[in-house]
Length: 489
Image (tube, rainbow, N blue to C red; front, side, top):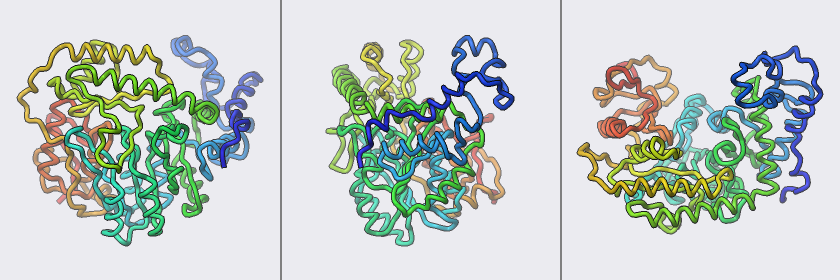
């Protein structure tokens, strides 16, 4: 059923916050700044006074996230209606917290979970918390573009056939680069086999609202998905949503898990931004996103006219297994003799342009409802200036394969390996040891090692090489030399 446009104009939580702020009641409750009166003067002068008047605690007038019965309940019901879910939940710890709840809602200790290897580390954290056993399967890789694409329907089907005991399938789509899997085909096959489908849709909270974008997870029929409203839409940082559809995931269990995992002192500012972001998308999302798509398409065409740069489009993706969110611009800079990390640094320091992410060969730009044509013009001018320096030979360091290692044999369940007695050893001496931590290049946060996997020489070489180009490695302790936590022999 389509969302009622008149109902979707409502913003019950935000309205309640404003009403309470304007009532000017005397506060003897938390937070301690008491509507901004106790806030640092410098802070208040910079952001203005009004924001603090809606930074509240759980009160009758503004409901309780742990047990919503009033305006938060209504706001979440409006979100479910807008997105086509049966139940929607506001999240104040980003999609990370939602991914934890999503995995825990479906997986019990010892359960086998099929996990696409392009998963964000928060999916693996959820598996550690649950005690489940991951069974990994690979996404496709494009050597020309130098990126992991996404999983194919055939690879997902083969994974279910190899692991007949698995009853849960975890996917990440679209990925950071905007490449989306063929969810309709994957979900259809999984449902025939009685397999639950969980989707980390952090980069797809907008997909449902425009027909020119890839199919959203809920529209494809998944059981549960989590979206980063703050990444693409008008939510403030850390604000996300979890959506539940159908009866195969226990609603009451999900409620209990979110009560365990979310703060009992949630930010009403973040929740209000979710209420408003939902209203904005439900009432004018197609119009707003249409402008974004036009801006991104124009920028892609202009980038591809700059010598030495290349920004791929959907026509450049191989086969028919993938779809592209065109609002993501992946710009390859390798023909300039630069790594993506170097290009990102130059754009920031010399041109005042900040990109979302860099990898070995690319930089990633997100075009969203907050961008204007003049912003894209400034980006294009900076890219033109970057290319105008002229190509230079890549430095003499060994260029690593752009394909990251996909992990070694899982010797122990991740939960056991994470909590087992451990020690730190130099990364260069860790070959053959069993990792106790998640190790990843961040962003995008795709694990190169998970607890319980053997550390291979190829993984060590890849990590050290990427670090030499400026990549940020999470899960490695930086002392005099990089160290990694491994299970004690």
